[in-house]
Image (cartoon, rainbow, N blue to C red):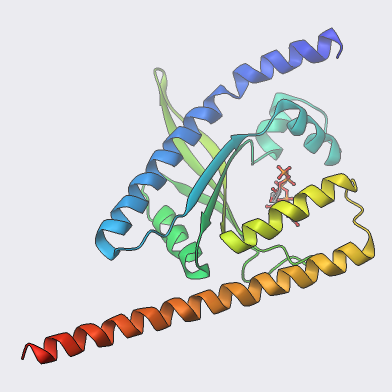
Length: 220
Ligand code: 0O2
């Protein structure tokens, strides 16, 4: 690694610091919303939250992929996923519940939504992507920081993690037979997600009937 490159990375580490605060704020918010939802509805929409700051190397290569010069201005303008949060949930319906909870926060501005759940990518990728802006309160006042939030089911996440690894292993050129198998696996994920919702609905219905029968027995 040459000195210039190393110095640049050090500079960027300072520049990236604020994104960590933004992630802390989003993570706290998600924890509170999830706990409140559990308290009110006896159901946790969020299974797991993972967050990361994009590494300087990965930011540089994304800029280069986009054909842009590596400058902090270009980073701020063109790289929207420096701070990234991945939220996994059990059911497809939870994805939109989580979206609604985020969208209804006064201090969070949703600036872009890509719905790959309703409109999956040709390779089978499914996920709801949001770019949000959240204020980080520094000593000099609030700074608005962009965070990418990806929301998907556990099954979609399982598929995406493997596909991502394969994509990098083949440097973006996944051989035809593997692409076909991945697409087949994505269809199975879709089937599994639909089946899980149906099972959950049956459970809810069963429990409601059970409750009604109990009340009837008690003469209420
Ligand atoms: P990495 O290594 O995960 O960080 P943009 O960010 O808007 O300039 P893009 O690609 O149009 O670029 O945005 P999009 O479609 O919202 O995708 C952003 C991120 O979603 C990607 O980040 C991936 O993490 C994930 N993603 C998108 N498409 C796929 C896919 O087909 N398979 C998998 N496994 N993940 C996907 P990066 O920076 O490309 O990669």
